[in-house]
Amino acid sequence: MKKFLSTTLMVLLVAVVAMAAGKSAITFSETSHDFGNIKAGGGPVTCEYKFTNTGDAPLVILTVTNGGCGCTTPDFPKEPIAPGKTGVIKIHFNPQGRSGEFRRQVSVKVNNGTKAKLNFTGVIVP
Image 1 (tube, rainbow, N blue to C red):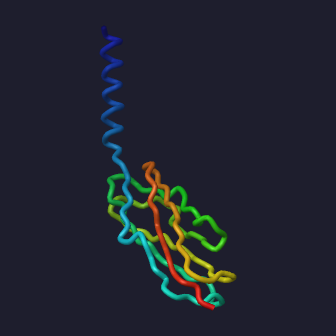
Image 2 (cartoon, rainbow, N blue to C red):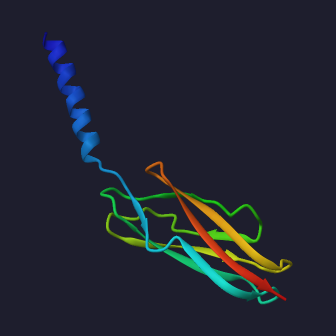
Image 3 (cartoon, rainbow, N blue to C red):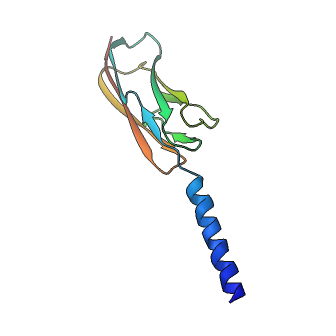
C-alpha cells in the first residue's frame, strides 16, 4: 500500500509539473506580403514577418523552409523568444533570371509542434 501511494504521488507530481510548464504560441501580425512590381536585375528584395510569442513558455523556431527554390532565403531568430516578446522572420527573394508573376510560400515550424505558412507574391518585370 505504501508503494502504491508513493507511486501515485509521483505520477501526480509529474502531471502537475508538466501542466505548469506551459506552451509556446506564435502569432504573426501579417502572414502575407505583396512586393508589387520588382525589376529582374534589381537585386534581392526582403520582406519581414513580425511575430509575438503569445504563449506562456519560450518559443523556439525550429525551421523555416526556403519556399521550394534557391531564389528564397529565410533569416530567423535562433535563440528562444520569451513569452510576450516579439521577433522577426525575414525572407529574401532574388528575382534574377525570372520574369512574370510569382507566388511563394514558406513554412515555419516551432517547438510546440505547429506550423505557420507565410506567403509572398509579386511581379518580376524586365
